[in-house]
Image 1: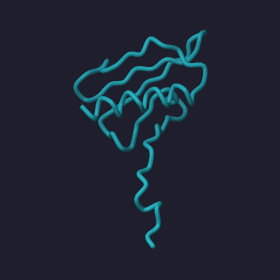
Image 2: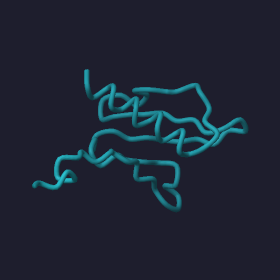
Image 3: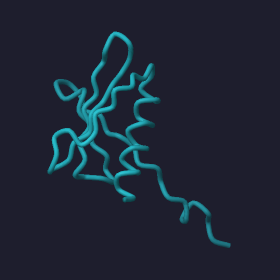
Image 4: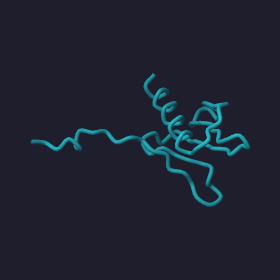
Length: 83
């Protein structure tokens, strides 16, 4: 019997920077995509860029938690890459 984990695809995750690069992130599975997050009084926001466009996506929504922000970024990137 084969192990199911061998067939399960891992979910992409965002690697956020540290120090002065704290608000900048990359997704290992999408090496050309860059993410920038911003903390506003009403929550977190983000923008996505790639090697061709600085503002590939600017989301005007605000997210209360980093988990919500990460999920929105990953969903959007997956939709872009599936086109």
